[in-house]
Structures are given as structure tokens and as C-alpha cells.
Image 1 (cartoon, rainbow, N blue to C red):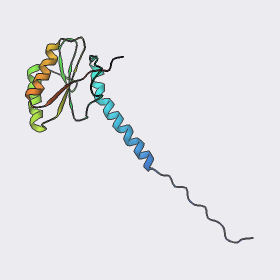
Image 2 (spheres, rainbow, N blue to C red):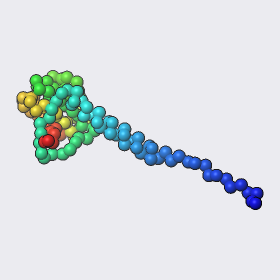
Image 3 (cartoon, one colour):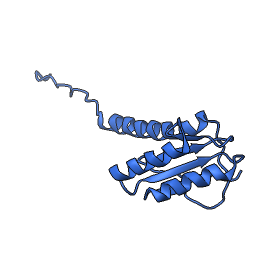
Image 4 (tube, rainbow, N blue to C red):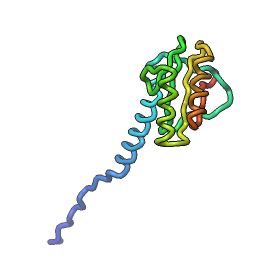
Amino acid sequence: MSLVVARRRRADINVVPLIDVLVVLVFFLLLSGRFEQTRALAIVPPTASAGTAGAEASALVVGVDREGKLYLEGKPIAADALAKALVDHALKSPGTEVIIVADERSLTGAAVGALDAAAKAGLKPRLQTRQPR
């Protein structure tokens, strides 16, 4: 009979995997919230079979709805105010991408005007499309 009692090792909880999962969830929520603005405006982008699959988080989003109204980051804005806001943003951070999200049933004049305003401001304009079904 042994007089020495074996000590049990204390159970440790490893929190590193938990933190990793939480960071991934936060990034997912931030990126999905970024594109939630387009759904709030009821904009359906046109389809295209070629192109990239997303946008960077640092890009500006300009929406064009079915009636041709412009939205900057989800807030209504006039065409001349959009041009001024893009120039002001270009002075702060040049080279930023501007994602133009136009409804597939909208007139092209408003979307082309937004593309032109972004290019004149010295920013990188891109037109967002969706994959065909």
C-alpha cells in the first residue's frame, strides 16, 4: 500500500481556438454588414460571368437605384454633392476604390455619372455585378 497520493492535474481550458473563431466571426459580420447596404436599397446588380468576387473593406460604396437616385454609403446624395464628396475623400486617401452598385433596371446615365465622378476625383471606380444563376 502506497502512502503517496497521486495528484490530479488541473484541467486547463485553451482559449486560443475560441479567440480565433471569434475573430473570424467578427470579420465575417463586418464584411457581410458592408454589403447589407445594397439590400437595404433594393438594388439588384446586373449579371456578369467574368469579374472578381468581392470588394475590399476600405472601398466607398455608391448605389444607384431603379429611379437613378444616388446613395453614398447608404445615404441619399445629389450628383454634384457626390462629386464633391469623392474629391474630398480622394484628398484624404487617394487610390481608394469606389464600388458602383447600380440596379440592373436603372438608366445607365446615373451609373456612368457616378463612374465619371469617381474617375475625375482620382479614385478607382468599379461596377459591381453578380454571377449568373
